[in-house]
Length: 171
Image (cartoon, rainbow, N blue to C red; front, side, top):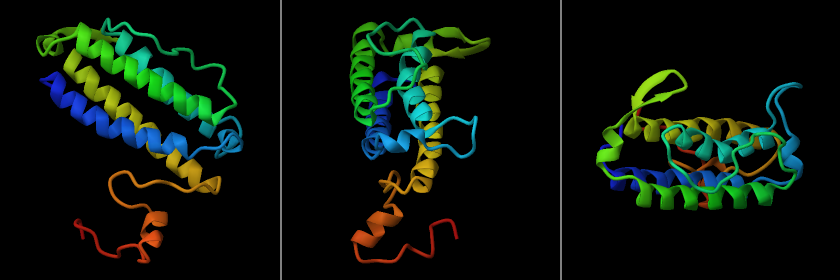
């Protein structure tokens, strides 16, 4: 849960930047890629990530201009990426003008779940992170390069002339 808008905005800046890097690596053709028939395609997940900003935050009364219809999925990867940037910008502007730190403590009903608005912001960040992970798997399967998010990706390690690290902090 976030207790201050500035803490959330710092977190959102990083996470939105990461999502933007993913979306900017999509191609029009890759949007059709799916794991199996009748599952969400890469384009469907990407567009859902865009529309969810408004769908989720509007449940807490935040008002701003952004797409909020999951269907139909645009056929342009560039349009999806630009829509994400615009939605994110409008979302931030709405937060800064419509909410205060005190607003984050207010309780709401989010699709039957009682939570504070500060918890809703955490949910929104986690929701985009979840779908970003799904997109990276589909991107690899579609033969796309995946940018690093919380560290260098396989492709970025190769650019550094290094093999992927064999040991992690968690070993």
